[in-house]
Image 1: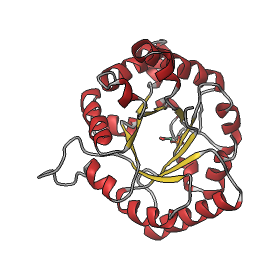
Image 2: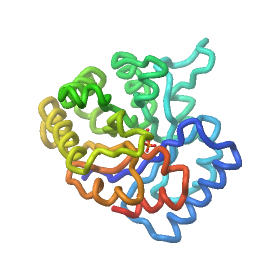
Image 3: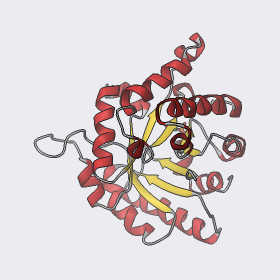
Length: 253
Ligand code: PGA
């Protein structure tokens, strides 16, 4: 059975104190409101990883993840953080290939394939992001475009490895814009991606892979999006910075 996952992507937000406050609120609400069978992942900026992990403590169901990792193992790469360093601080997930990394830091499919490998080698679960721009959506080539992102970055993995990857479909035109894909648009793409995975790895393997939706998911639209058969959770940006909103999304399942 594939996991239901709600992951918060804090991006480059929150000071130490703000991060501590948000995490404590989320952990307390998660416990008090008895959220069950949803895996929650908090993805703060790097310096928060260890303190956030400590605050989560042994709360079952909540995990911490990074927003990026290096494609290298170690050495003279100033400013980079390797998957092994991330794992050594108790993180279990890492977002790879977010559209902001692709756009502002020129990360391409080939580099992202290496990052996914490093994450897996170090026991981290990659949350691999894919998604099309508005231009591509309007040209009607979004499906082939996003399938290609998967083929290029993930299809060298073995069947065993691909089952350890979480995919996040995030149409770029919906990220931080307040515009979401409709639940039907999300389902259509998620189903297409699962079929694409099945064409390479078989139906059984594809059925085990969680595919999250990301792009302006909020408490008021989460329920509809999360009710779709192939939508297995969400990658939440803006709304993950407010404990009430984030937990309300988690509870929309
Ligand atoms: P958003 O961001 O929820 O603010 O649209 C999602 C993301 O970029 O992961």
